[in-house]
Amino acid sequence: MKRMLSGIKPSGQLTLGNYIGALKEFVKYQDEYEMYVFIANLHTLTVYQDPEILRKNLRDTVLLYLACGLDPKKTKIFMQSDIMEQAQLGFILSCNIYLGELNRMTQYKDKLSKGEEGMSSGFYVYPTLMAADILAYQPDYVPVGDDQKQHVELTRDVAVRFNNRYGETFKVPEPLIPKQGARIMSLSDPSKKMSKSDASDKGCIYLLDDPKAARKKVMSAVTDSINEINYDPKNQPGVANLLTIHSALSGTSIDALVEQFKGQGYGTLKKAVADEVEKLLVQLQTSYKELLDQNILTEVLAQGKASAQGIAHATLVEVQTKVGIEI
Ligand code: TYM
Image (tube, rainbow, N blue to C red):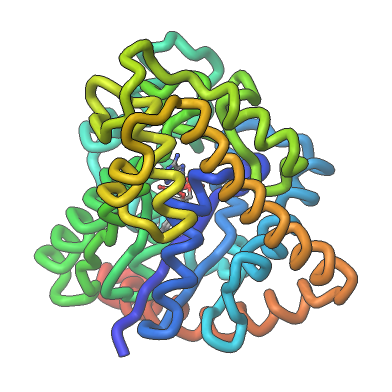
């Protein structure tokens, strides 16, 4: 069975973008692959987090993983910081990644170009830890949304470089990006990605949003003045985004939706998308509440850790031996 690994960084509440671009895919793949999904709690610290809020976000993330359908019998769910081998491997990999490569990372360049002050050095080296998160487990595939592709490419580059320097050690993983829904856009500004770090809440649907409030966000989504329902991400990004969300949640193809909504106003499309979003949130939140009462988090994470640690440990020992730091 081929192995797959991915993670989500709960630096806030999980969003509809995380669901469509990542979580839904993890659930789809868990029957076919040996699946590892972790909570990237160390990565959240690259930007200051209120410790109390962070703890709640971590718990909610595990519950939402389960509520979305990740089954701990099939998927190993674990906390990044529980596997210390990952951070240790991260340091060794950072010694094999050049400053120039980190300078080219889009997320870093974006912050730099916006003149963001007080960026932490953790934020700068973030992709080196992400490379370790992945390579420690020797996965074949890494399912991610579009914005993480560059990080997986850096991971591949460092894996190849390490293998050339020290001999075959790492499997070189492939990113797996969904054909549709890999970049869900903000509802209030469809030129930007829907993101949990959005300044305004209006463009972002959180999986724990009140379903009625989420409906309102969809109903007030920014569209355009063309007033025709086409799938044209370049000229009609708002409408294309609504069609993508609908298609991802309903399973109806975008072509079929364009046909179905032909000649109708944007209000009709928005209402249909709002129905799909509301249905998803009600269903997720019902399971979330049931799981909350079951008190199963510690057990799920302990099981995940037990399955994951051996693999990461074996990789780290091999790496340490190859680079010469083990005597
Ligand atoms: P994060 O937490 O920003 O996002 C988690 C996953 O959700 C996807 N995603 C989206 N997909 C579609 N539309 C959107 N608007 C959208 N927003 C987010 C992301 O592409 C991602 O797949 N660095 C990672 C976490 C991480 C990781 C890893 C992932 C740390 N180590 C190792 C994979 C493997 C991150 O910040 O993702």
